Length: 366
Image (cartoon, rainbow, N blue to C red; front, side):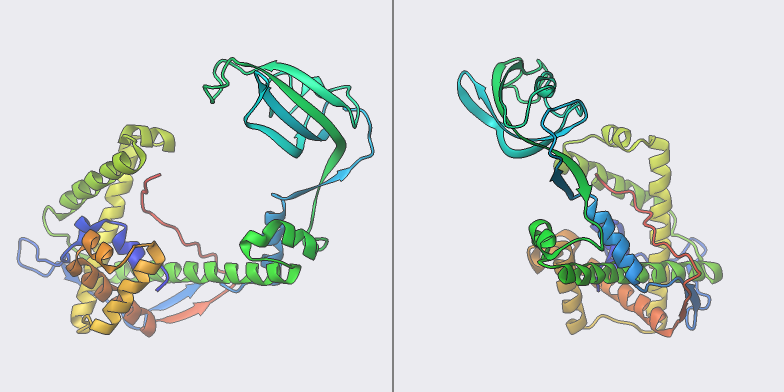
């Protein structure tokens, strides 16, 4: 279960669906009227990973790893990329973050404090330069802000920036730049990237299947949310959302909305739509589970818990149960089984000409 139904359920936080959602409306009629849910015909796009996909993904990765070649040029000019060693001294003592060897700096990029790059223009390869500079008053490090310093710089060479390509990358280049990803050769990287894309595609496929199923269920079924439930769940969600912002990010809701470039009205609309869709979907799954007599089983529930613990980084089962409660987790597991029942009985075809995109409607914390 790689982030399947738990994405739908857990995202609402424990308060939203704890104990189930089932109920009847004020007239005493069942709140869910099920349409067809067995034998659903779904057409989705292709999730096959092609050689071209692997190549394009690797090419994108390579753009973050430039290769610098010596130009043989001897005098520094504006726009050159210089390879330098430097040491920054304050009152004759090297300060933290002010020393490096073999650093590549583009003259004119304004990557360093005022005067540093200009001070290298006209200098020659092999020359040692002392730059007497002052950090700006608003510099992020208060210990250096407004302080006079000396940078001792050695110009090693003037280089040009090139990039490896899928066809030109070598084992040495891969081992030197991607060993932290587990790649020590070109073949390792091609194999690893393919497996990564296949895993992503499988996850997207599961999400797309669920989205397509809910779309079909909404076409043939009707759901009446119990009176007051939607407003109650929206309030519970917002309470936990804003609390999470404060405790985890020290941020108020207004600041969060500003950082996301959205208004409170737009955000409220997104939350309402998301909660309403999630509750509706949950009610549909609960009704299908009842109709098909789908129940929880100890072995399956334990595996379900372990999958969640593994996928979402919970310390142990106690931590999971403490956050969501045993009833909630059991309810989520039964709903997951109901979704799997629908999938197992659906007729799914895959067509490369169909554009299927997995989209998440959830408003999330930063």
